[in-house]
Length: 523
Image (tube, one colour):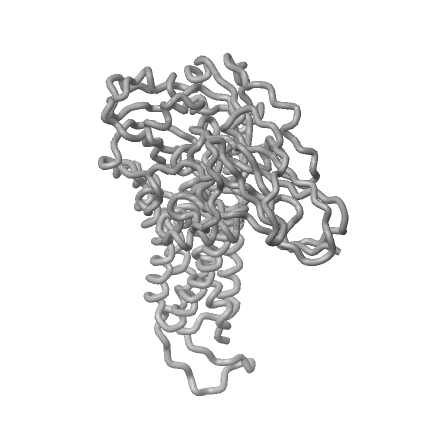
């Protein structure tokens, strides 16, 4: 009996899954970011147009990376199934299709490597081995398809068994082959995941470091940093709730015992510094607010934390920067780059190489063992995670990851106020309520916040305290809510006296602008 189309499609699927599982195991042993789906996903992230990248961040938030990986996985399964069906008609064409599917990860790994040819080969090796395994498994599963048809007797078959051509594989053979390879893929994939998790556990042990006390502690927080309104984002956001926007599909697990920070480029004395040497330097501690340039008006990609680190000037003074250098090109362990204007980074603000966040070592998702933090600039030009090198250079000589994609080279954070409560489209009871939220204008500070109910006059809100101009502030406005549908708007005035503009701007290329407005129902 001829095997069903579902089982034939299964031959392509399990062959590719076995190749992916083998590659995942090899990547887990060497470097998890080399796993096929990770390198293919990274290629997608680097290749998609800016409007699509922005849409993903705005609509999916922190789920953008899982959604991308699931979408890629579904695509691989569908294409692999089609390759299996193709083998019903032409085994060689089916094998070529499997090789193409598996080869995409190889190409992605090579294109994604910014290092030497030997390093590019190392990055692609798991995918290469996985591709070979996938093609061999597919050829073995379809070997019966290659047997030439033989003549079949016209006499009735003995024992009433149906006659068949040797050119058509039996359903039993196909089923056994598919199930056997599927079991092997599951076993190898589970082994790879176990190795990966073990590496993560080892990295967690490495992160259990004892951070030094700051030589320059953070100023005490004013007693009124929290305005006392339920639902307002806390002044200091816990590490687990802090927003995350980056290009890493697999969070780098960097061993601090082997980590170094290279400082070079247009400097008189290039050098490298180890983790222990960095921790031995004088530390400062500051409450600083970070903001992502992808943040829409009223968006969630802003957060405040207490950071511990070494002043950036203390590191760079040792190198001796050439006066003609224009930018600091910082590079992440995963190859991401960011360009920070030297004139801003070295103007006296509390720029740092951070090692601690809210009293703990940096979480892996936020850059362990070290990251850059430069207050007053959007993160894409100031906040490189997993930083491994800083190079003084010019904008003409080198362009950073997002600069190459048309984003701004200098990106000071725009003034913004956000309504946290009441929630958009919510219903609240009439009477005394609080309209409240947060506002920021890093390195300029906030001078005031104003609220407008429907088309009424702008009225001053009450501000929470702040330890410096580099943090956000909470605000609230007491309102006697009346029944009906209402529009609530908010705007901020920065420390220089400039009022937040009403005109709407999209995040691309230098940050969103406009007043935040929510519509609610009272009654």
